[in-house]
Length: 256
Image 1 (cartoon, rainbow, N blue to C red):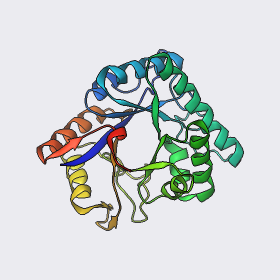
Image 2 (cartoon, helix red, strand yellow):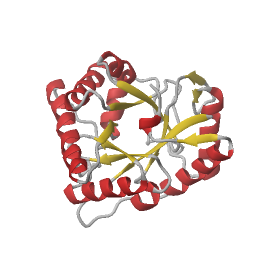
Image 3 (cartoon, rainbow, N blue to C red):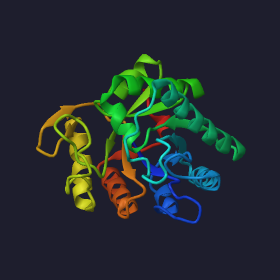
Image 4 (cartoon, one colour):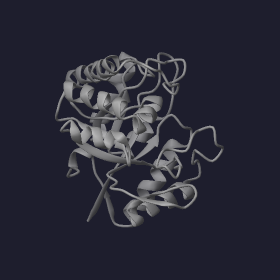
């Protein structure tokens, strides 16, 4: 049977401000990438997300980003490679402590927002992220954009790499995510999301907004938990995959 992972970015609330439907999303996905306090999240939010994941049998991942609460980590920040490496390790360590306290463990890492976009095509940034992950735990799975420098850097660092595609984002012909400045960058319609995911699975490729195909391995599909339609899209995609004989599994069950 074909297997695939579904993941989502969660734990992105902060203090009294609620972002996304973590409880609903946890009942659909099999792996959760939890914000670690820099772009979103706080100790209480992190602990709550960990407990929800454990209760639903969802594997736990760290979702490190730039120190940018105001911009939700979606503003590019130039930084030294050493600082970037330590910033990644620091955030992973915070979630590792929270997971340990709840009887769980962190098993993957996925960069967030602008950090993810910059490391997609900047080999030095990608390598710094990989070093930061390896320093925290060399057994962690590096969740990296398909066709990115992060895939190369992760393998070079000796990490297991999960190739990630998106349920709710369209792609440029370069293989990068289509910029949010374009009105069609984000997919909010369930039928469109299902069509994209099934096409990627059938083609073994990223299908860009212009129809080009970029062959790639795909291990996991991500839905943005902060988007209002996120839970609805994730549910529709899971139902469609299962109806097509695809088993949804945690990242820890994928063979790399």
